[in-house]
Image 1 (cartoon, one colour):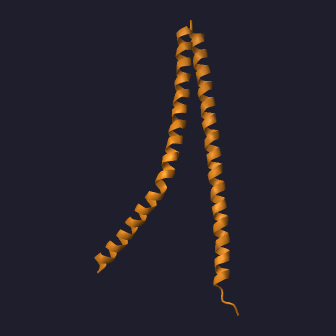
Image 2 (cartoon, rainbow, N blue to C red):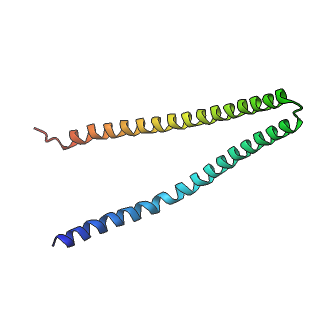
Length: 121
């Protein structure tokens, strides 16, 4: 008997997971294409920065020129990291707003539900 109950519960979870996977697939594909585009853009920026560094190093005549190249490259990397951090912070802000609106909706539904189920005297 216990095995049958466990099988039924496991089957129920499997069906729920399968149904949920079907509904979430199109959204993830759109999101994947966008993330892929952004990742390629970042890689191109890094390659460009490295090519500039390579050109600068090749043109350097002495140690001071080489040091200048590394300093410039370091500044470029710092700017790229700053931009990425700002993008992440914007995404976090959007997620927090979305969660806050969900909380408010759930709170409003919770307030409506008990009022509807209370018996009238």
